[in-house]
Image (tube, rainbow, N blue to C red; front, side, top):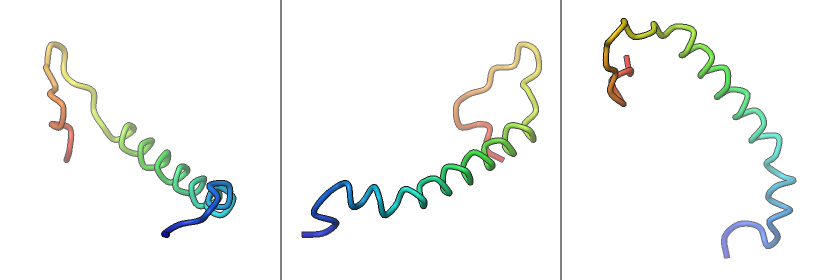
Length: 52
């Protein structure tokens, strides 16, 4: 069997890791949205076309 026998063990063990990953993701998204320029009036932006 892989993993921990009790899900609570996993949650206690990795909560700090998940919190740090959340903070890193939030910072990356903040940077991305601050750097992005809004579409011009009437411009249609398709999903996936914002990657740069």
